[in-house]
Amino acid sequence: MVDEFLQHTVRNNDLVLTINQRVWLALVCCPPNELGGLINRLQTNWQQQSRACLAGHLPDLCFEIGPVHELAEEHAALTEQLMDYYGQLQQSQTCSTKLLIVDDDRDIVRGVAVRLQAAGYDISTAHDGITGYEAALKTRPDAMILDMRMPGMNGMAVMSQMSQRPETRNIPVIVLSASLRDQQSALDMGARYFLDKPCDPRTLLAALHTIAVPSFT
Image (cartoon, rainbow, N blue to C red):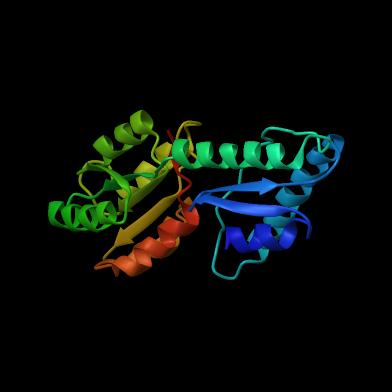
């Protein structure tokens, strides 16, 4: 979806290259003083598309201005420099989406972790709410998969505590629960998705793809 958005939003003489599933490089031909306006237009258009999305909240996008080259340079040399930069980005932007799974059912944690690790996610786990909240503060995951009914501190209390801390309030949460009675209260507390147990791995992966913006190394 992001790739399609960029391809349609930038001008016809600009080029969008995919670095990986989370990073794109746009080669833009314009005066340097127009770059700020271009980024503002991209941000505004993406926010409008996010609000209009029927499938739910779209991931936040971050735009950065890379190297600027004068067109007076020899075209062959300029093309070589740009492609070198493209190659460097591909090598350096290693996608490492960190997920924290918090559930007191160790079998569920193990099963979900195996599936998500196979999909390329970096997984950490906790088996009670208190440990999960402390892990969120320490590791700053890109997203959390959270059970509702746990001893000590339940999922609602975890989300409440996270919402009060600047380090954790923006961590997107997917709730997995066997009880539909928790659904509205979890969504009201700020959960991005509420999924029934047992959860179809494809549904979970689709939800993660829309909310989890990875860390880069």
